Length: 106
Length: 181
Image (cartoon, rainbow over all chains, first blue to last red):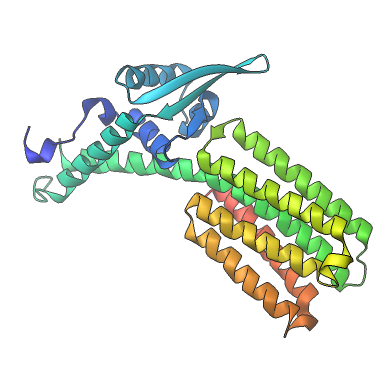
């Protein structure tokens, strides 16, 4: 891996997952968002969000907790420390890429 | 990966951050608009000579009930340590407000309104510190200073100043709640 791709994470790279992780990261450490709120704010379908969350959870980037409020099931989603590190590293890799080789896109 | 793709992805990340910010700003905007309306109606009525204790009681009770309902609604979708702190700060303000009401003029003399508004300013400053948002902290600090000025040297404009402040808060709150910036 060379300097320009250091921190680049293919899992975070997918645009919806990147937006999702940016959203959770911006809410701060230990923040948890309810699944439906997350779905509404990101403008994605339930199935789409579930699939992305499953991938991120398998990698240990998000924590998914299920519970009940009264009789209503609720799912809470939060970014893990590992997820925060991966998001930051990926963002830095993207910014490095943008600042390097300015002639490449011409 | 090409730079164009990297730029598009960075924009996707910024969009995610903006949406998270909007979630925070929506509640802040709703609360600002609500209490702006309370100040506008309460102090505006007093400035026009139509104020009454019953009007204030109704406005403040309604304001508190709606504020806690809005906070409860927000907690159904989002839980953050800062949110918990904000809830405790304003619950503390509510208790202090109740204590001031019970202590009455014996404790505050003629400065009940000033005492309450200084508590509001303090709660704003504490909220700004909890949210790590300097703009909210300094809004509270400037409000405390303005309260001191209008309670002292500029006392003649106290009621109108607060009604105007309420109008400004109502307008800005509606803008925040609508645009979520």
